[in-house]
Structures are given as structure tokens and as C-alpha cells.
Length: 253
Image (tube, rainbow, N blue to C red; front, side, top):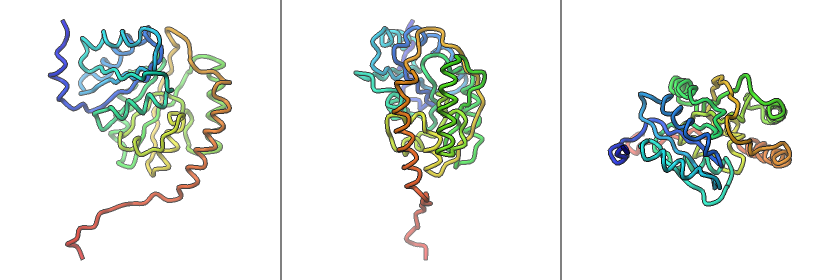
């Protein structure tokens, strides 16, 4: 029997889970239930951003949404990439705290509570908790990531070992203050620091993909990645000091 959605729609969630998906119909049902299990006891919503999928992703999400009032589907007419999907989800989120994870099932939702606890316990000036993957699967893909992270860390000096991990928890207002571009999801820690916020880290364990295949390869992002890295380096260099702004009441001398 379908669950009445309207009764929960007026209750603001404490956390919004944003999941970009592109042709992940086979992975979504298990992932959705894992998210619900991980967030048990919290008021949450899960926003699946359907980034122009050509498989049964949309139909699967519609079916799941009939019995899961916390599940929302946002759809791009055509594929715009992971950063655009994450941004659409964050903009639609109703909670002040957002957690992102990849839609391929390799990010384990059971680590979401650890990210949230770390963010809640952190000082106000910490804007992001970034997952760092241990025991990664996939030899060549892991090698690509290791090389990319090493080059990025050497150039940006952002102290982040694994910026490509999809598991991230952050304050929504902090994310929306970041300059948007097509590879934002790979440079989020460096840009959060650019805005004057700290970044904390939680170790997570990567899982093998159960269905489908990766949409990324070395050559389809190598040269774009070099250009993006140059652009982010320029952005960081151009912002030397983050202003501390306070409002002064008119009745104070």
C-alpha cells in the first residue's frame, strides 16, 4: 500500500542525501534501502538526480517513490555531468546539511552517520567532511585516481588525499557559496578552504560495483582535468583573504 507522501512533505528534514545517477537502474533499489537503513532515526530526504538516463532509471525511481515518501527524483532532460547533478540536488535540498554519494553503489551508505557525527562535532568553521577511501577496488582505476590526487595535492596543497570520493557531508550554505564549474565535485575541499572553512576527514571503505560499468576513463578526463586544475589554482591564488563580516547596530557608538 503506498505511503501517504503529503504527511511528511511538510516536515523539514535534518539532512538531505543527494545521489547523482546516470543509467544506474539496477543499482538504485539496493542503494535506496541502504540509505534508509543508515539514516534510521533521523528526519531525512534522499534526492536522486537523474542525469539524463536512457535506461529504466526514471521508472525505477518513480516506483520506489510510491512507497518511500522520503525519496525524491529530480531529472535532467539530458546528461550534464556529475557536478551539475550534485548542484541540482543541493539546490533542491530542504535540509541545512547535505550528504552526497555516488549512484553506482561503490560508496557504502553505512558510513553516512560517521560523516554526520564528524560534521556535527566539528567547530562552526568546518564546512565539509570528506570521505577518504581505503581498500579501493579496481587496479587501473585506482592507479588513475592515485596519480590525479597526487598531482592535485602538489599543486593546490589542500591536504586532501582522496578528493574524488563521492561520500561528502557539508553545510548547504557553504556549498552554494562555491564558484560553480563542471568539475566542482573533484575540487570541493580546496574550494571550501578557499572560502575560509576547514575540512575534516573520515575514512571509508570502497565497494566493487555490483551492476553496470564505470562512465569514466583516463583519456576522457585527463586533459580536461589539467585545465580544471589550472583554473582552480588561479581561483585560489586570486582570493588572498576571506573577509570577516559583522553588522554594526546603529545604536552602538
